[in-house]
Length: 73
Image (cartoon, rainbow, N blue to C red; front, top):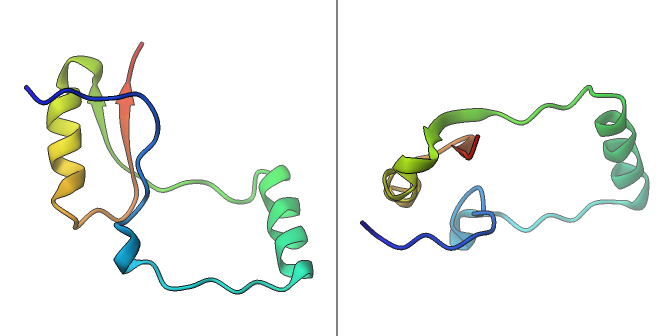
C-alpha cells in the first residue's frame, strides 16, 4: 500500500488547468454564491479511509472530474 500524507489533492494536474484571470467583482460574486449555498462541489467518488491508497491511485489516473473523498468517519 502506498503511504498517503494528509492534505488535499488538486482537482487536476497543474498542466491541465487553464490560467484564471478574474475581475475583482467576479471574485466577490463567486464568494456571495458560495456563502448562499448556491455552489456545490461535484463529488466523483467516496472511498473508505482503509481504501486511501486506492483513492490516491484512482485520482492519479488523471481522468477525474469531481472531488475524490476519503471518508475518515
